[in-house]
Image 1: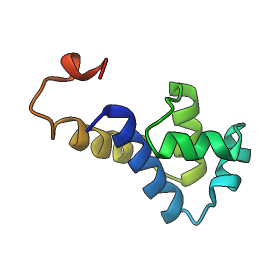
Image 2: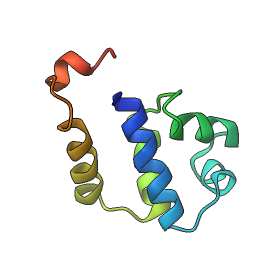
Image 3: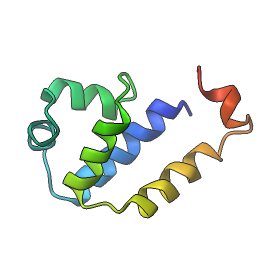
Image 4: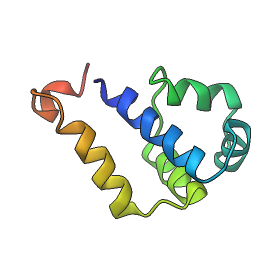
Length: 86
């Protein structure tokens, strides 16, 4: 799984658990709803600053997010440094 796809999946899960629509999350982090949709689909990257805003908006702690992101990253057979440009 591509890293953008995994991050997008996590964001979608966090947003839904927080009871937020894509539009509400987009307004909170300063993006358009279409950008959030693309991020969740793994078709658009986001900055670290935007990711931190998402975590805050969804009420996800940094350690919880890191754990979920790490789990997805380690599910691939290739090391992270080989998957960065996928």
